[in-house]
Length: 59
Image (cartoon, rainbow, N blue to C red; front, side, top):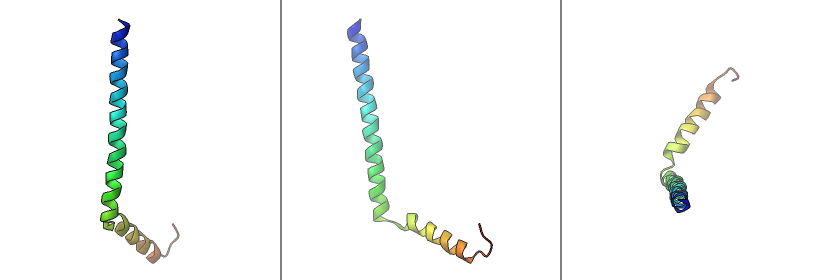
């Protein structure tokens, strides 16, 4: 009976480890993709800066 609980705990631990690794590598891959094509990250921010500088009233 105790062996079944241990096996379930090991499986749960491995599942959590695998999920954590997938999230970490997914974020890493997204960062690489963002660095290769920064237009989507930098462009909108530059547009916001221009818009705010043209605005006369304070925020």
